[in-house]
Figure 1 (cartoon, rainbow, N blue to C red):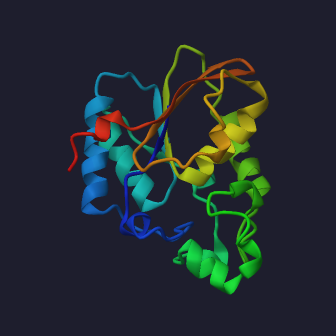
Figure 2 (tube, one colour):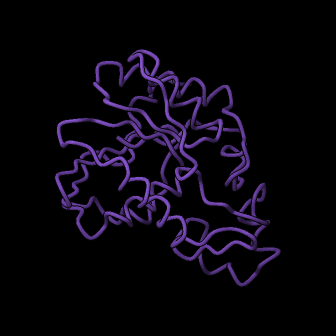
Figure 3 (cartoon, one colour):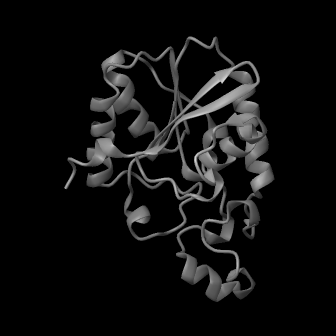
Length: 202
């Protein structure tokens, strides 16, 4: 099960966060609690998260009712956005006008100055999933970032069955749930960017 971390102030301001360690906002903490509530009855064999604070805090809220420790893994960090970090898309395209035709969610085309390419993110994400391969009857919690979610779908893209629309072009919401069923090399989307559990948050 893949979960995007709860909202931060930079999310609200539509600023690229990348490796900047921005904490959850009050709304983000409420979202983490909503995730903990909706996932309370699920059984997780293990829990992993990006080592950045916003992901770890979200993961710990979900894992606490299950008595699980969260294993931090730097391979689950967001894109390193380099010189883009802290900027909005409009600010980025003012400095690098050649990017205007790409769009702010065109992850495959990202090559931030001093940052990572999409292929580099996919390589570390793929290595993470190779290392945590698990029996098909186990559910593993992975709390991470939007860029890593895109990279995950790209890594498994050739084998994903019943894709719901163009999954690689969607914008993953904070505190969303995406569930993949893995059976050997076959991967199927069960839930994509699910956010109904957030309806009760004002």
